[in-house]
Length: 421
Image (cartoon, rainbow, N blue to C red; front, side):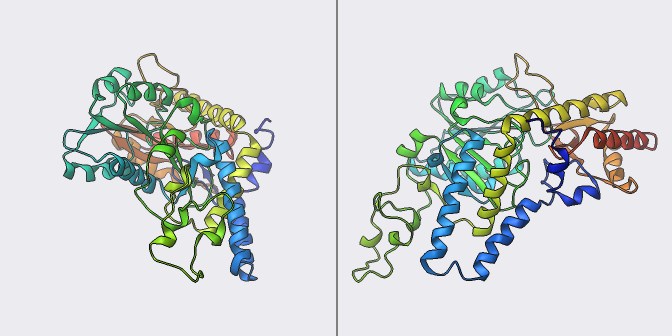
């Protein structure tokens, strides 16, 4: 499927694109009629009373099952390796606590992050310092994380390595399989924050051999703001107990589901024995309660739409737009800082649409971003400043709803700005 030929059909789902040139998928996807219509359908059902009693739980459980199936397709997992979270930071907290619950964190242990990590990654792991855990940081080299630096930092006292599959700023995209090979040699685990990749590039968690993956749905997946996927490798599902316990997740046998798992109405109900059942041996054991019904409804609709377009087709289109953007920016004298190709000494794979560039200096970049919205008729929205570990510039992120014509208009606008700054 050639997504360029389906551009008008794709754009019809995002009516605000007629009012602006939106290049900010890395921040948040634009308003989507797919999400809107799914939420409306969900609330219409609630309005007419179909959530009363067992009927409501039935249609919610069915949509939950369908959502797992669609999410598993997008990351190359099995449906029973997936549970739901509301935000990435929730998933990262769960990873930290699951590990500590099963193998308590001790003084001398270490966690490895990079100086290109999203702030929530570092902040979440700071809690471990009270237990004497060292937080180690791999420094970037021109926005890249080098293999030798990762190998030097990870050792036999490392319990967890946290990466952002695509860097929030530079657009550096990991070859996660290589990262996992390094980390697993030391019997440590890998947590993959894929929010800047999922929905833009093909992900196969089984081939990568990653242990945990977490992603919110509202960026490149173009979904609702409070839904997300939390993947746990099957072998870990079977060997780790959850740190967050929920009576909803108990396993009362293959023929017991829905409200039958919650014995509120039983004559012999007891606050201990009625809930004293094992957890299921799949990722549902880690699910932190229930997900908001309308968010799950909207996320399922979005996932189904993305899978219908084809993740390989999406990757090709997004990568083509990112390459075209980089070429056009270079033509007007800007320096593109996002790595373009896999490099033998770096842990990266092919980039996608998330593009970082500079106009020649920090102050010029700041002034350029401040003037982006000044374009008449259709202002530019989405470009933003990002700096981490001494590396940064202007971040721009085209997605499948963008056209080469819009990129041309943006670049010409940036060219005119350069004459003023």
